[in-house]
Amino acid sequence: MSFFEVVWLFFVCSFLGWVMETVSEAVRHRRYIDRSLLFSPLCPVYGITAVLLSMGLAELRGNYAFLFLGSALGATVAEWIAGHFLEWVTGTRWWDYSKFRWNLDGYICLYASALWGVLGLILVEWGTPLLLTFFRWVPALPMQIVLCALLLLLAVDLLATGLSLSGLRNRMPRVETVGHRLAVLTLRLGLWIFRRCDAHIRRAHPAAVMGRRREKSQVSVFARGTSFYSITLLFAAGSLCGDLVETIFCRIRLGEWMSRSSLVWGPFSVVWGMALAGGTLLMYRYRHYSSSFFFVAGTLLGGLYEYLCSVCSEAILGTVFWDYSAIPFNLGGRINLLYCFFWGFAAVAWFRGLYPYLAKWIAKIPERAGKWFVRALTVFLAVDMLVSGLALLRYSARHAGEPADAAWEVWMDTHYGDEVMERIYPKAVFTD
Image (cartoon, rainbow, N blue to C red):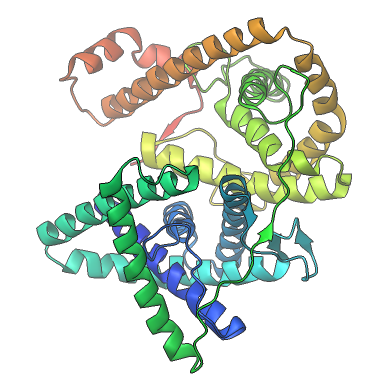
């Protein structure tokens, strides 16, 4: 999808999500309740999730079972993140599934996940193609102008919302004016929807379930819990250990040493690093749960994560770094059942064995030296990823016969030619 197609899909699904939430609240509570954090009639989590599912699961069209499962998992993770983000930003709990069975934290539950799976299946299978067909039918220039205007309004809305949440309402009066006008528009539209759902209008808002704010620890400990420093160190450690594990595995299974790094500088496997850091960030608060919980969560989330990594690398870089087509019970060669179980066992081993000891070791690092080290490491990894991405883009372009025109392309061809790239990425497969 092009940039403007993504923007179009985001705004349409954000608005439809807001309409769905408004109708649901009107039917259940018989009153109008605005479910958006923004002043405008948009629920961005719906738009973001719709874009991610439409791009990441497009290959599963026609395979209803896996499309349902992928949509349910992806949307559930998005709902969990959105719920905790809103609680962190506003100090309030925006929804609560505690009354439903099979819920987790009251933010997600099996019933809602099944609903998201059905809606995601409908969206990816029929909704997205229909919306994109309409987008391509409309003249390009007027549509692009409208979408740019909507992006500008969204930026102002986000700024106005941020000012309101931070208590700085009078610092930028023009921004606040736009925000209030959007709020009036949202209110009018919401009440119009409500009148169609219920004859008796009661303009009242329910008391939000207040979330408990955690008291900050008075003891200064380096890289506590899921802090930036802790997650960055876990990402680096996971990338390094993942590269080492894969290298040894290839040596044992294939009888040869080969590079398994994702980056051109250093033995770092980004897929492993992101999995370790992201998994810790998501499930840290559940670290005391049972091993079976981590196995199931690791199997499902790991499979979804690996599938999306494969899709994104092919879409962005034009290259596939693994292919499981020869292994039984695979899905498009991107994931297979055996490796999904491996993600489950890895989650159990991490939270039950490795993480507690590693967290204690990290906490013993001197705070000042540790922070400077992590900052330097962050800069190095960011530059490493940038150079690696550009090198892979040129590697793919050379394979397609595209000459080097820009100065950076010439530099990449000189320092990271085919021989170097084949040594770093021996299993990379180009897609036409």
